[in-house]
Image (cartoon, rainbow, N blue to C red; front, side):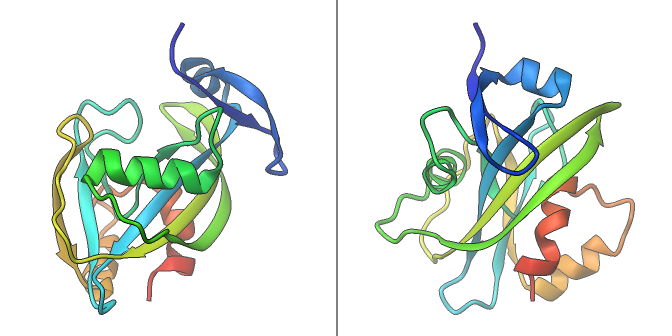
Length: 169
């Protein structure tokens, strides 16, 4: 049996659990939580490129460190776990909820439906990429990210794009 994740309904209510592969194959609603890491002064944010081996959105850029919500997690718990796994950031300061959205899109010619939870953490400490998840990362201003996002050929994860109007300056 593969990894089991929480399954939601269209309205955002948790209704059960299923293997991740089935959730993706059948386009079931699930949830994802991510953290936007900003410098303590708020002037920069951390952007990264996903590895080419990721199952979803491989090789694309993102500004949220995150992943799917597990069966025994709420979105904040998943966000904190993913932050530690992907960027090696462990802190006593809880991330602050910035935005939520529902994304009903297409990936690899199949429907993908996800309730998104975006958090923010102010942080200036060390970052250690999980090599299986993150290929590279760097600090940018919001203006630098906006500039890259205007280029339609620049690969950026589509679900996070849904949240950008709410989380970028």
